[in-house]
Length: 201
Picture 1 (cartoon, helix red, strand yellow):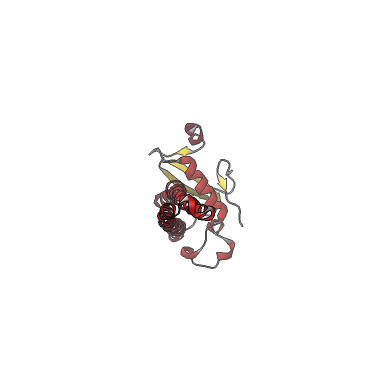
Picture 2 (picture 1 turned 90 degrees about the horizontal axis):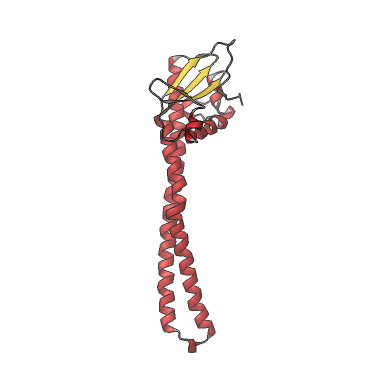
């Protein structure tokens, strides 16, 4: 299945997968609301970002390059700024994901601590209250036990389940940040078939 997916992509002489993006001008890569902002501070067009992320997920661990095909070829300074802005934007996404991961870890450790404290109270209550103490005392002790295990289970679930999507996203953003970004000119009278076209927002 993986080979069939990779067959959709062109390969370089170095066997790198080519993620192709076709646009008219460099400005098509950016959000309309940021057209007057410096390149380093602009938000990338969401359709472009989604396309890159989906493509990188398909590519997996294979090396790849991002090749931007334009009708109007930018100068070297603009190309350098575009590369920097792509790097900066995915660094920003990576930082958001990392903060979310840190928040998840803090929440998990807090829940784990609360669970242990409740479990200790439940054990103490069970030892203190015998069946002769009444139904309410026994229900209270059992309730503490249930609350403790719920808290512990949620903490464990966060640590062993929810962390994986965050780390996968961080790794994906790093792949994009470290990938070469190439530019090429496509004559106006030449078809752009076979390339993803990011429409002007």
